[in-house]
Image (cartoon, rainbow, N blue to C red; front, side, top):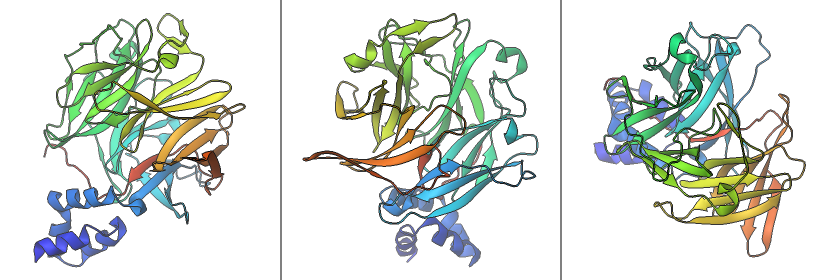
Length: 382
């Protein structure tokens, strides 16, 4: 009988399931059990109604400065639905000094919040589930202090699920001025940060990233970013084996012109990695065209080009979501100003060539992050 209830409830939207929490102790225990939450997540990943786009917005209430406000949009080609999700920030943080939404994994968001501007590390890093509104603050990393901050040139964080240890892990990727390895990993079950000793690289690619604050795509148990040696290359880090690996890029990308400075490397075009339908994606935009590839196999040996579209007069093009094999949602940032407009378009690839249509997202939306509504919320030390 109980398994029948689990099968029925696991197919319901999060909002409907949460209502059962208050019915009785039995329902609360059933819904809170990790087995049920994982089963619900597995169903939600394959349901279009459970896919959402989260986008930050600034409310008019100037007194509400200890909360972060987001719009959550349905990813529907038929009817767009929008509601508001709020993060109650810790009392020792002030989002007005800066915040960063690093990534999303299984309906969980990893967010950094600063208490003072112009410092490398956020004062608070927390995990937040916008569907259940639960959040938890993580302990500081081993290197997150004022003395070490001066040596750090840039860093970013990623959140992923380790299926081998059945644990969620946070990866902290750091680039230091002296080249010292300070990459760290945090396992929620252990509730502790640990320095990663493995630094191997197949062809000498720098395991640090070429640009700071970039999104770390998580695909097949590994984080990915762009690294630098004599040329541009993709680097992956597997959170189970804790091994780095080089992934060759298409020739037009790996031999882009690099401008080197004392602690930095610049590229004159927009290039980056992303996740598209569970596959690793690569995009490259110059003044005239935007190009998009996906990795065809898990071994990182073959890239397949999806399409090339004109990009003249567009500051950035951000791959956002794949509706199907032939429909891609792209976010167009029109200029580099803080008040830049964002336009979403659906690019369809078919036998009759490329077609595009404006996705009916309102003017409040900025570059958003796609997530799956879920009940998942891991506990520290458990």
